[in-house]
Image (cartoon, rainbow, N blue to C red):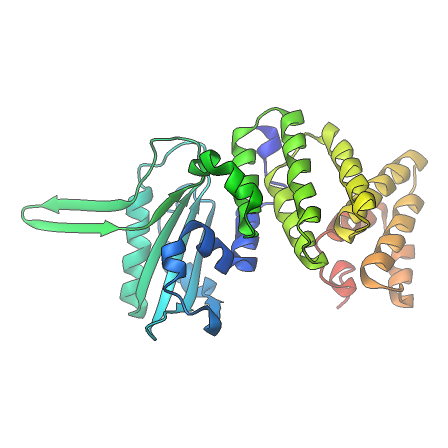
Length: 320
């Protein structure tokens, strides 16, 4: 794995985790259309993360990228749990099919419900296509098959992804580019192209921000190209008259960090934080202004990064 592929955070599965949690129905519709037609989507769906953790805690996890367990309702009135393994790795893993079976039977045994296991393979090895687990000994036989999709197969249908109305097509495109492109400038061009699609498809502000976050995390750039990428995206926002916070926020924060370093004190960072807080959360309350004034350089540096993902001002500034 190259440096530009290295995750920004310790929870490596977060881009896929975010994508699956935000766009589960679209994910199934694009990658498993036959199964999509069997689900009663009007009844919604529920993540079952705690249940999945209970059966995977002591299992050999291999190098999986993300696991999700979702409860859905079938059109025939039944309740089904959908186990999704998203395998994102550069090399095939011999034990993958067995792990799919292990998780399947543990869920079935523990909760007594039908479990549908889906495999999404995002590696780049054409021959790695596990879709079953079998063994036989002395007349005792077991055969377990599961639906599988290989993301690189979509390269032959790239034009379909580009015109697809399904938002998950952008996630698939981003993942393929992230795995295929090693050259930094090529990654930058691909990333800009995908971000431009966000603004051309008429998505809502929330949709653009969420998808930007996923794409930005999947296709990471060398540090020396990051500024240029942000400047181009900022220009796209100007062109489309869509000044959404996510991009402008990151651009302003990076400028603020540089100002703080150049000035040798925390004034530039604090001023930038005040502006970004006002942009994201509204007028700065007195208690927050006081915390910024009293904060150390290290604390300001932490907040200036944390604001990118903070859901509230209280969470950002650790107000208890």
